[in-house]
Amino acid sequence: MISPWQIRKFLLIQPRAETIRLTSGDAVSQEICPRRVNKSWAKIAETIFALSPELIELLDKDGNLIRAIRPDSEAAQTGAAPAIPSAVSGDPETARLTHFANLLHRAYEHSTDVAFTKLVELVERLDSRSDSIESRLERTEAQNRRLLQQQIDDAYERAQEQAEAAGGSGVKDEIMTSLLSGALQGQHAVNGKAKA
Image 1 (cartoon, one colour):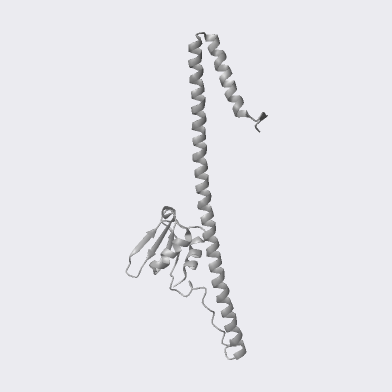
Image 2 (image 1 turned 135 degrees about the vertical axis):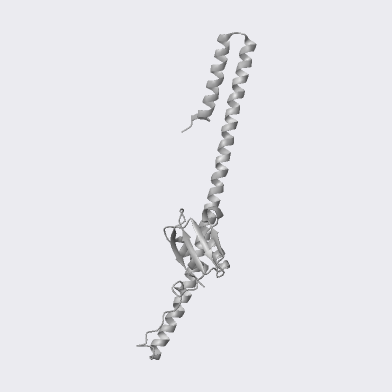
């Protein structure tokens, strides 16, 4: 069986799947829609690995097959050590060097896979944090707009009340003009300096 990391690499090849169909030995198939699940590709790959299907099929939005893989096949297991050619298999020095190269390959493959997986998880966390910050900012801006509109409405109502109390329409227009111009100047000036 291939590793979750190899499944993830298979899933990320372009074009990406709209639906992932998993088929087990007893012809039971499950479908995963990555967009609906709202999980990272690494988590989807771990889920697929845990289900250990015999066939993984990637389908496009119309249900057409994009590509498929059998996780137990030798072609899927790219991390396996290659066979030693028969011409050099009898030489002990070549066998020792090949064995050492395979050990190095496996060590670097594992550390690279782990490091890249952690990097992907970090980027996904930063992305979700950025989304939450943006949504909080949008809510704060909307609340600020509502408060500003409420202040303008309150100033307008006070101006109307003062104008009605004064009794004259000319006085009413003057009060409205002075209140609105004062409110606008308050928005554009901070400490006597105009806002940029």
